[in-house]
Length: 384
Ligand code: NAI
Image: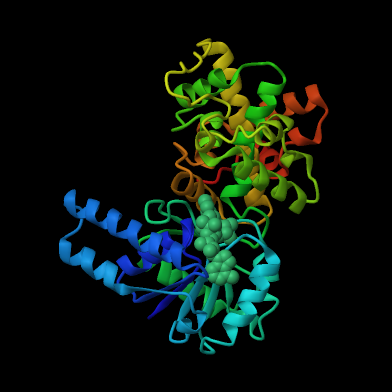
């Protein structure tokens, strides 16, 4: 089957590589020829390195390269069985593009979006046959991150879902099934990793370096929240937080932080601007954490309890199964353990007590414990 990818930026180029590696002929389309040239050149560089490292043979590299054709014309999607859109995150632009795509492809071509934050139902609403719309959400960088969230919209037909899931599984990705809700699984459940860390900083409990130290050294996360936000970019991470907050009708659980907003406004975007929560200029020494284990444990337990609460909520609200929530966080954002398995190890009651204590102390809705966590803690039932 021929696969079309629209948009040759960060995500589109990576998705084209994944499809091509799995043996598909791929048409990669972008408005901008320069972007296409860049995508082609960077793919060549990646493949050359893989050959050097003996990860793939020269023949395989040549095959992957020659599988992809680069074009500025969407009419080249005509023979495709699946088109994945990865263009700018703007609903008006996506509407225009999907309506146009439907006029080009065959009747049974599946039309997919890689959107991180827009509703699949809304994207599909412009189609004459909306039953063929689906969300296929890859993680950055697409060739390296194993997770793909598969998101059927309310309009999506079952056979479209089955076909899509089977196809992406055959690309050796880990797929999880997810309801068409804001942030899907990962961008919803992960919010407290940033939000609660920022809150702890704002209350003056600890500085960036100490919070990062607590989460990496004591929590086992690969990166602390502030280091990670500096990697993602404070502008990008803030925009995601704000859009999830608005999409949840301003539920206080997802409230963005002034600290992050001010950093973004100041141009302290993170690594890409040379300064974020940390200063990346050459020769600047990084701040040392206060290695106070009792304080560190308190920070780690608080952020972890908030993350676990979100993981329970995703299951409670039927966004995804418990297995898929844990898979998503370990394979999409490299968490050291699935949050629900982790909760079981800690004990549901202990997590609940922690949340109840926060809820009582602050009186804020943000800390309300999830009803499913309460029920399961009371009954002694467990997920696994
Ligand atoms: P990007 O800005 O790197 O690339 C977008 C590309 O689309 C650009 O090359 C642009 O020239 C092209 N484009 C824009 N309008 C077009 C049109 N009408 N027709 C053809 N090409 C057009 O963006 P990125 O980061 O790759 O994101 C793309 C999509 O993937 C967005 O919906 C985003 O939310 C989603 N996404 C992004 C992730 C990330 O980490 N960057 C992760 C997962 C999803």
